[in-house]
Length: 341
Image (cartoon, rainbow, N blue to C red; front, top):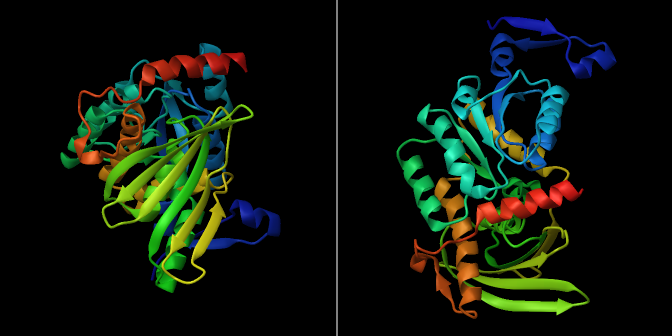
């Protein structure tokens, strides 16, 4: 017979009820210790609040070499009750179960992830996971050699994509095409929409073609056409300079097979963190690294197609010498914009 431990939890304090749980369940719910690498973006602060509500994971220490000031780092430590600011990533690795790399500069991601990888510890790399083909290949090689790399956009794990995937399977509907939107910028935020769509469709992208741009009343919108090897077609639209929701329209092979939805951004951090914690606690695998890197390759091919006046670019034909997206240039712009706030 399994021994039980009776204790009061937050829910029962309000009702006065005592809840008995098994010793095994109690042990399983240990707090996961997370190392934070940089607080450039808003995610660390938002994740910290969500994890406190979920009561399963916690940032315990931080390494910061980004543009945030010492005062901002100290405030993050105090507000979230971290134990320490580490002088090196290696020092941080020794204190935690997993690392979260939050650089706004994707060109720093591999450098900051490597100490966790070398120590055999998992590391979550925030979106975009990288910005060029060389880093895509390096990430794939590291995972092939046993690295535990998780990522990257919370939209990939949004409830809406999970639910539509389940609904279509139950109705035996096959996807013919998908249309999706995003805003703010082309890559850093724009990557969200194809992360979500790629999570729905899976791997197997053949080519990308830049459709063109539309401008009116200061709005600037660009569209890209993506072809999967199985024949599915996707159009993703990016409006730069303004936030736009991730709206999705899925067309299937059934009569009235049009399914439209908007991603609820209030829930996406919770669903992402739950997936990470399920991986840490139960070993439930997340997205394969080749799916994460294929999403990056879609944007690289789209960028190349635009530069070549709309030529169709196959992912297999991407070149290592292409510079891709410049993370250092983006970091400068992002830091400047944050200081103006």
